[in-house]
Length: 180
Image 1 (cartoon, helix red, strand yellow):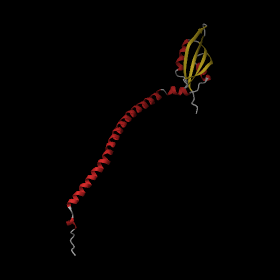
Image 2: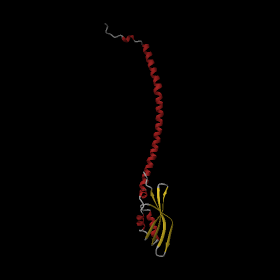
Image 3: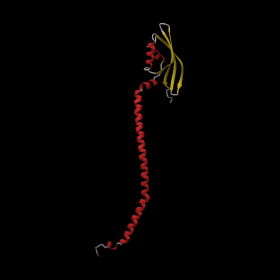
Image 4: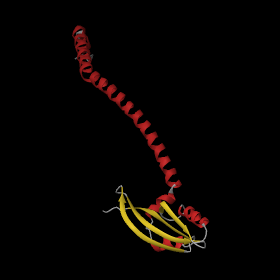
């Protein structure tokens, strides 16, 4: 028995090269048919993703800018928003008006809905005042009142040498509570 291995001497190199060539051809064919189309789809998807990402980044920047503007507006106009939420009370308004007028009578004329978001009370105010300066102070004071109030024309001022009688309409705006 011979202990030397002679199996490598029996290798047919031509057959080996043929099998190697066939293996390389089959591998290249599989790569061409399976992997290359996926690479092409990947590039198309990556391009679409990059376009969408750029668009999203632009939209996000605009959204962030608008949110910052909204925060500034909300903080700057906090009193107005609170005024819309405050419920109007005729007694509170009469106390406020009596600071400027010697006598105030408040009569509700009508109540209607404005644009389905706001409730508007139209009130007829009859008052007596000593000087017209108090009337202008009252109009200025409406800007700082706890409700949104608009003084409407015509404003009728009549004097009897001692007291000025005034009659005018005001509109009080408030939000309609949302029904759930």
